[in-house]
Length: 95
Image (cartoon, rainbow, N blue to C red; front, top):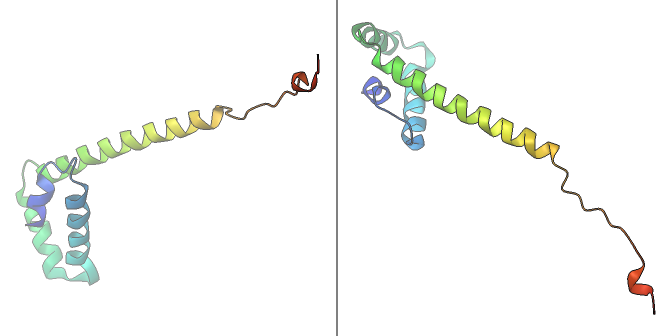
């Protein structure tokens, strides 16, 4: 079941991705060799590596997004939005 979730296109489904990752962690936790071997056997049987291909595409999409966010933040730091106050004293001139 876990690998069938990862074989799906998880782009745009962050809740499903998060829950699948948490389920995978719990499933593999504490060195349960029966569970670990069951996932290994499923991965070996998957000749097209569709679970890994799906994860690779998802990691690429997330990585591209994070690079764009970093570029945006770097450009934001370069901008100077501070206002310079120049007092021309025009409003004090009675003439």
